[in-house]
Length: 435
Ligand SMILES: [Zn+2]
Image (cartoon, rainbow, N blue to C red; front, side, top):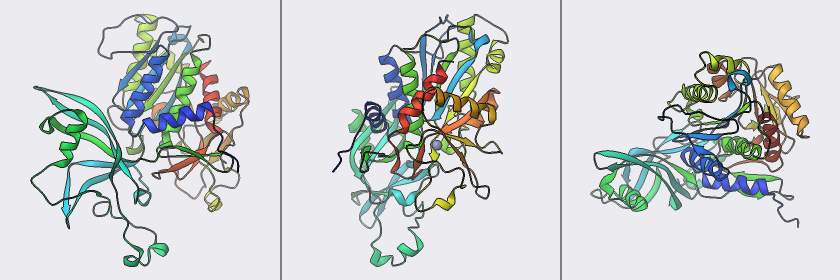
């Protein structure tokens, strides 16, 4: 029997996945990795201060992060090389008043976030993670929690009581069937959920004001398959792209400072449409880029718009590999395969921000990195998904390409991808950052 093979980048990828049960944790973990190689936090409220060539900064806003390395040329002339992805994944969010007492059970009320494949969340060991806002005198402070132990479960109904389940599929009503078992209790005078959070954060339960918390599958990321060809984990969409971009930026540390300014933009809230204060439709990235131009080039009126004319965006989001049992769901000439390289995604209505010039750029990046690339175009008779690519490209007015590594089980609680593609995407992105 062949032992599962692994590689340093896959070990780092698994560590990133396991440390990132929510977008808040993903953005914070990325910031920590960047700090280890010399990136420092940029305070968005601080007064302008000069940025020199090669300087490395990041801006963290809850579950979103923008990191950059200033290029050797004035960004107003040389532009940006932006890699963008999203930190959030579909999951089940715990409601503000979650306690539901039914038949002697205490369940936690949840609301689906994004396009959850609901049936994949049942009969799993679920932990709880996210952001909690605490009372701090007359003010407030936020803390992250990751309660990494089996606390909740959404139990299936026995087949004896649901005889048609294999013919009809497991149909779950989000309001009635998804609330998660949390305890055996009918003591309505207590608030054990708030008490749990207080204990985790070392504060009195009365100082726990409210939260952005989600359930998550506790199973760690694993390498699988006869020859270690697969990786199984939650949240591959889109932590796979976030990690590839991060690997590329970290590796670029060892490269000479190129003319262009490298930017990694990891957005929260893509799965719910991106129209939030830190989402891809917000003005946030535009403001950060404006600040880079001003701080790096002096107060240069019109500098940002000149920079954007020279800018390229690589938007990365996971792609649909062909499924062995459902090959007819793909266009016959556009069937991405696992471990066959990064996928370039195109859609005529610009659900993907790809045209020929961007696709050709990415093909050459792959050639330069000696990695294969593939194409994905949706079947013409199926509706197409989307990414942050069109939103960021349209908002900034920049040329773009949409790419992503191939995967199966997208939006399941437990997704899968290939183990060869991560290094390839990171290599192509590293070449992109070289300008
Ligand atoms: Zn995605």
